[in-house]
Length: 414
Image 1: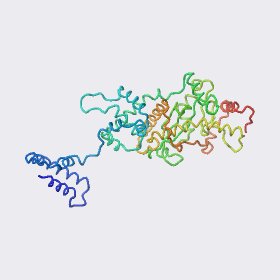
Image 2 (image 1 turned 180 degrees about the horizontal axis):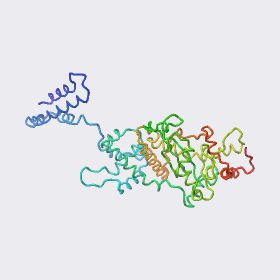
Image 3 (image 1 turned 90 degrees about the vertical axis):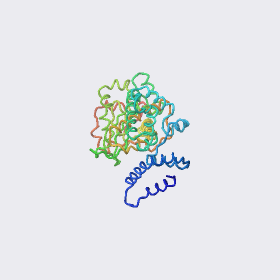
Image 4 (image 1 turned 180 degrees about the vertical axis):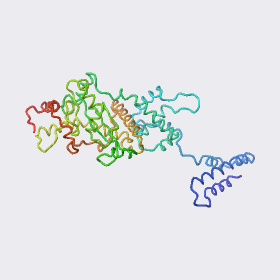
């Protein structure tokens, strides 16, 4: 059978007379016909010694044309990128990425079997995860890019996330030594001369699809579904404590009261906040002996109180910038709208925070972050929390007033 006859057969098989047949049945019929003819075509060309140049590419199309389009040897393309191109696509510096790849390679999370199918390497595994978290593409696209199945893509992503989470306590850690506490306080003091600040706290929303259960609990005040990420950062936008997974409908103060940080600080304040150190937060947070919010603007603040609020806001901007940087670097965090497993979503967010700290350690601040990611705090009065968190114990007020008196010794308080 000549190549022309094969072409005629392909055309006739591709356009059946019954126009109502779906694509799947047509493709199946075509594949069966191809299989039945392929052996005859191959034998005939051998005996006829046909040298038609169309035959080889046409046979390749007939045998593989219905398969998914996948990129071959994409790793070679990645290695040919410049450092700037690598960072643009994977959102991490190449040196940081390959430092983590080398650690992953020596871990027990990468299969080392020498039988059966060749295991996916640590390098490809980590790059798949970076592509997943840096973009919003579906698993199908990622699997085609790296030439592996969709199920293997998801399995690799879960494997790398599990490995990254083992680093949580080593990478996101509270300042505990005297030197670490002093360095953190000095970093905040260098901004606006506010002393004894050990961190800035705030919450941000992680957008999710509508959960199948208890959906109303996850609908936030902006009328979309989300989970909360609470974080404490130092002056360099490095996370020192995170708490992720509470429903988006919860107020920042309620998330704060449910977090392990609150319980630990409430029961063991001297160890968590040594030497009268404290956190600063926006007006969503209560005034405590270890947490200082701004003065609530009731229209009667003194000029000194308004100045204090300005200095306070400028200093705590580091946590808002950290959220903007996190969502800009890892766009999956900003547009997390494809997965209903909330535990998986929380794990991805936590892994992103860990990678964020690795980047801060090498002074990679990803300057192109978007300012519109900055989360603005809201007043407790707007949500009826003022009465719940009102505390008549003056000791909880002393921290803010002590800081205020340091800045304005002769000022009057409204």
